Image (cartoon, rainbow, N blue to C red; front, side, top):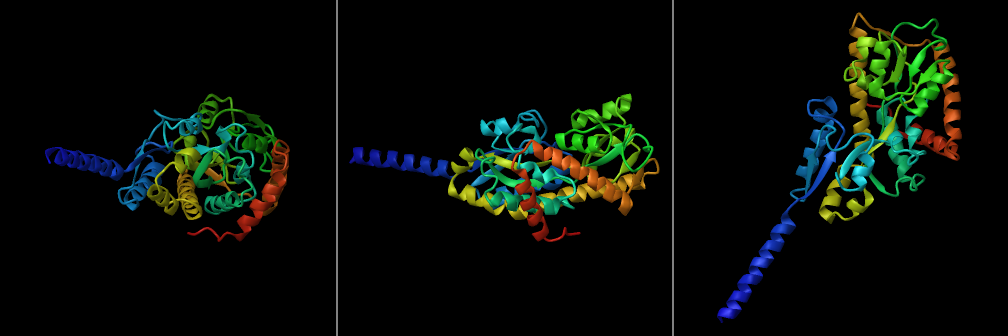
Length: 337
């Protein structure tokens, strides 16, 4: 009897240990490439992480890791694939050659807002035409960031083009946009644009209003042409291998808090931040923000269409993707106030 009782006791203990282990939440480290105190961290990533954790009812914990001590924009894709972190934020142009068609969300003259562009990009992904690019990554949200504009140290000789200026174009697309507008493109990263303008080695840069304050653009650039020049597209993502290994409850929680609606919400947040910084610049007497008249705007668009055509040459077959993305954009609802 004593032996039977001991066996039952051991079995009960083991069962309790298994149940306790099963009850422990899955912990996913999320590196959003933003730091505590920054607007994106406090207003979007932190609330999203808290919502997912609460919604899982104990099945999942999102462990938010701010800053760049674990990942940076150059290594985040590999760090997610290697399970150093389980969720990351990456821009497609930092993953060389992996997402040539998904970068369609970065083109000028297409999406009039990040909100609509991000929803259309998710819908494009769901058609399956991008499956070969997402064979390793499982996106939770997709983003077409607000359009970048031209920030100059001083007014150009003419608003018809940018001839005679040296412009930092941080991406292939924005460099081509600068070139087709007559400027000499300078290949530097976004954070390096400030120093180039400060030293006088560049006359301007192409960046969104989102980084106007964080990159201190207003300290070195005082003339801003509010014309869409292209942007960057990206995603919040996991590795497919890691996602597929999650318990059903964790997967279901992520499904409820990702996808088309969340991509649109993410884009809407970026639009709001972009618009806030634009209005702040307009209110600053040291800054001049110019909107092109219809005729000049049309002339810029024609030149930028040339930049798109040149960009497409390095991506055989992307013309069909562009047409499909345009159609999906036309089907999305207007951006909400």
